[in-house]
Length: 500
Length: 128
Image 1 (cartoon, rainbow over the protein chains, first blue to last red):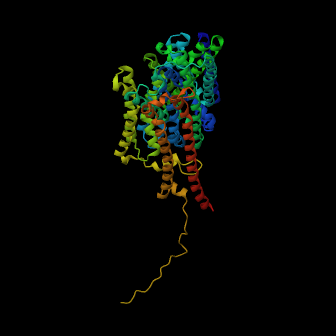
Image 2: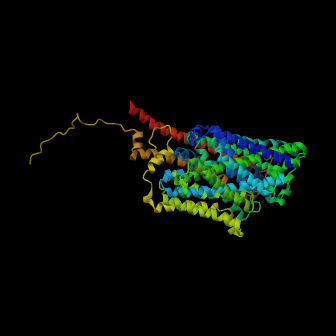
Image 3: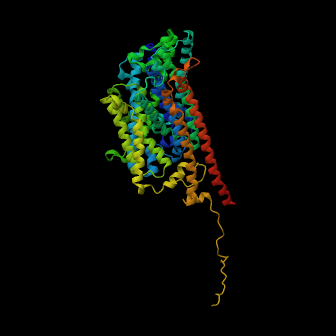
């Protein structure tokens, strides 16, 4: 695609995001404005907003790149990212909304009444968020480099700065409808070019992709390691979705538990609709742009295809549409995650007052946002880029090893205690953070490398085992008000029951 | 030995409490044994529904990797020019996941309606 079209698309999306963020600031000034307005968000709007925030660069660009490179095995990523919401629906959606918790640390506090669990989960939210943000920033750098020729740090820094400006100005708080709009932007930006590309493909005589046999068949070159990897990805994505910070925050905006369930059901439909598309781009890429794999630019296949298949202005226009969608994906997900992180960290700062200075809620939020963006930005600039869909799975693995046990056991098992929860969070968390760090730094080979590259299959059972075992050993610490909490989590709001 | 004189013991009707039916809501409020049982049975039925969904996912989607390994020939089957794995993993999984979710929501809402009916029914008794 021509650099001019790419730059135009980036400028338009960035300007629109900043403008809408500024408008949002005027609409809602206080946190209570935000809360009250949010509680009336209908399932239709809310599910679009959740999907809009959730479909990140990993979905928009990453899946097609992985399919182009590795073939059928990679279809498990979008399946996992969708099925994650099914498990969220059955285990978490309604009870979490009924708990009234705005963040996971809030949930831990009200279920276990322990500031230790609260602190531990705050740190873990930050860890998950950083692992999620880093590949978004890196992906932005690679995308901007591949399409405009600018150095990699330009795109990375641009996204980080826009996100920071947005969150600091308070814009993201009020604009559920913008995130909702983003979903339809991304869907359109994928669907319309795909229709044209499909026509060209038909006109070319519907050529089949040319690839090694193992590209076509899942687990084509089957080894115990590849089977392990597939299941580890399944576990991480199925169980990790419920623990992502920006997902939990959105659930708070449902009016009640019943609406939370209906919202999640609609999310399943919206995500399923979207995830049909990136695969098609990956397959078309195999036909028209297989050289991207060796060039190391597989992640840009979605953006490259229009230019290669359609000459002239038409191809440029479609490429610009896709570039706009991709940039919208970088911005909306990064803003959502940063906002959620800043909320969690800001709560902590406001509560404690670092250096004995009392910060106002808004100031705390702004400092927290700055800190939350800086670290993944530095990591993104320094670390070796790996495919965006792969590295996002580290965030899912960490969430699945820590918050999945905390939420599932906290909601469904009366026996959970604060020491048990801390044991599980720390053990599962250490396992799931050490593994990607070792993979990124020393990258061991063989079975050890496989186990570390996809830790979820062993770190999730570890998290559950530590949490259950720790709770059984400290039975006397079961909160006295657990019965009342269960009433609050599981009974419909319409009933006038004592939920305090 | 003469038989002891038979004594008639009756409750003094004037000060006896009339029988007060206790409502489900009171039982739940006071966390009595009965209230616990109601809430526990609601939680248990919801958990059973959740675990049914998990088992369905594990036995269908969860087994697919193994199925494609064991029955390697399936990967060669094509339907309308598209390989079977691509149809199953790329398309068919998504409606299946949605249908499972829809069934779960229906069940969970019905369980809550039943629970609410139980609480509300005894509440109208209480008010009448």
